[in-house]
Length: 334
Image (cartoon, rainbow, N blue to C red; front, side, top):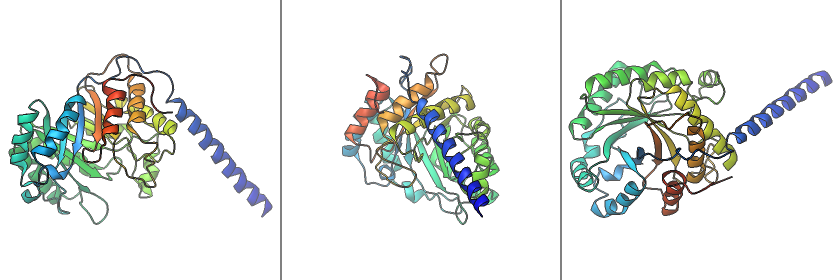
């Protein structure tokens, strides 16, 4: 028994040493100064809530949001029109006021592209992307919103396991069904921080990460990927910054240069097991993204950020986003 206890304690001590070393290495990713060119080039995105297409938001709300979109150099918005039914159907009644919204939005912001944000949970008992009939209904809904006047379709299915073939099939089928000039984009999870980590997590039913190879396969089928670089479970600003800087570098390596990359910037109040709202803040996310981008030999043209989400972002968070990414003026966060 003593021998066994010694073995257990030795193993735990080794794990603690590895975890501590990993934390130090991660924190080091969030050091140094970003290059001067690692800033916004006018290609950024914003996730927008459902109230815009169900009649709750109108001209007054847009008058308040429009200056943020302009000053934030937002080129693309993803407007929530779902969620899908569990069989993949998208009911037109869920975006009944889309015509009025699109008219109003384009009168105010004619240069900003508007994609319909469509999604659903894909865990057991929910939407099944491996089912051909379900995918057909999803594609039909995507075609409907394109016909309704949206510039494209933005998918957000969670949690999609690493190497899931259903998502690949859905993207192929959607691309074939949409008009040639329609945008196709998808939100994607974080890349595994250590090679091979995605596989065991998927086996135990916790598909948090994708491999860089699977992200590359997905990216080849779309025009844009928006990385959900939040809900990271990092407990401090320094570790969150290091994690996002590393994520940015990994994503840039995985995604082809002709595909637009948006790295997510959190602007919402949620506090739960995988998110510390005091650590995951816009000033840290934007500096970390700049640090990750700075490892490139030159500014990547199709690269920006995506703010989540319009209806919770405060004036202070928008100001921090602009200071950190659109018009950086110094170091933020520690």
